[in-house]
Image 1 (cartoon, rainbow, N blue to C red):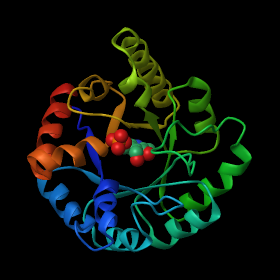
Image 2: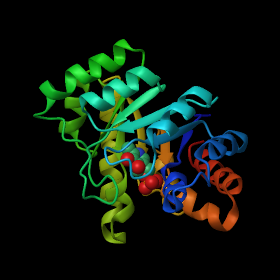
Image 3: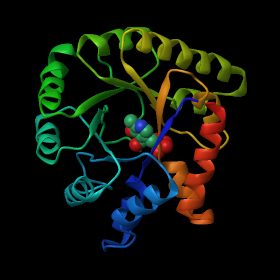
Length: 242
Ligand code: PXP
């Protein structure tokens, strides 16, 4: 049986905390529940505008989490230095646009290799695995291989937002991209917009090793509790990935 991993993105625990400027709800408490519920990793995004996760959260979580930590960040000197200092297990490089509500599209690597390669090299020299968040496009997979990425995280937003008519095509794009990445020796992750209803076909793609899911899990936790939601998500993805 393929042991697909679930990384839980807890940015929006921090969003809620920051709404009142205090300490509750505490993202570190969420990390403990995520572990107890059986998930495999914790994901946090340190945005340049610090709208949810703060520097202090990254410090606390990388120091005290017993689960592997995946730090999402933009490719710039400030973020790379923070990562090399705090040493998460993995960094996922994402495009960042200050005005966006969430990460809107994948990174455009093709054409940006010269800018990205030194950052990737610095992270790898610090024993941090490097993932690139990209749209499921063969050109971007090949470019990810050329700049030395260990992992590609395929953006599933296009599939999740597709109309019923278009969903099979979008799923097929993910399948083709996953196959190509695997053939090139790049580990395949996927995420963005996944929910109980949409996750199974993505979990069923044989090459996908890890899913990163945030907004739906944290939102649904308001109604059912974080531990219950994670257990249900794990049940769905493990059943689909058998
Ligand atoms: N993966 C990446 C690279 C992301 O940027 C995000 C959103 O922060 C996610 C996964 C999780 O997406 P969602 O919150 O829609 O589940």
